[in-house]
Image (cartoon, rainbow, N blue to C red; front, side, top):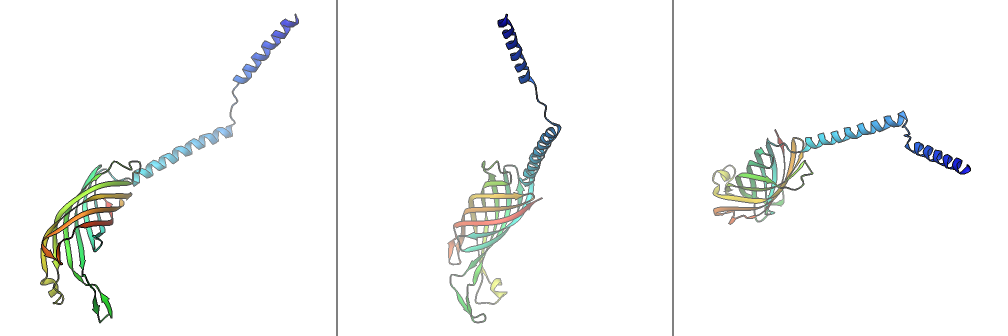
Length: 229
C-alpha cells in the first residue's frame, strides 16, 4: 500500500514540475515598453542611414559642370573647365584646359631685385572626355571610381619676348597639335557637389617644334570639384 501511495506522490510531483516549467512568466509593462522603444529606435536609425546614403550617392542621370587644376609631366600647370552628362554606369564631358609653359632658365629682374622664371607661352586644349564606372566599391554609394579616355586638338602659343605687351601676344608664334590621354580616376559625391581625382598618361604633340620641342608626353595629375544639376 505504501508503494502505491509513494508512486502516486511521485506522479503528482512530476506533473506539477512540468506545469511549472510550461508556465510563461510575463514581462513587466516597463520592460515591454523599453523593448518597443529599442525596436523603434533601431528602425529609425536604419531609415536615417538609408536616406543619408541616397543623398550622398551620385544621381543616375544628370548634367554636371566643374573646374580643375592639372600638372602635366611635373612641369606644366594648367586649369580647366568642364561640362558633361552623367549616366548610371558611364558619362561624357567636354573639357577646355589652359596650360602655362615656363622658361627653362631664370632671369634677373632689377625692378624686384630677384630672379624670376618667365612664361614662354601657353597651350590651349579642347578635349572630349568619356568615362566608364568600374565595378568596385559598390558598397560605397558616394564613391565612383572610373576609367576615362579623352582626345582633342591643342594650340601652342609662344610669345615674342622682344616686344612689349600687347605686341608680344599679337606677334606670337602658334602651332597646332593633338592630345590623347587615358587613366583611372574617382568621383567623391557629397550630395549635389563632388570632388574628383585623376591620373592619366597623356600624349601631347605638335606638328612642328614649339617651346624647343614637339613632344610633351607625360603623366598628368589633376584634382577638381563640380556640381550636378
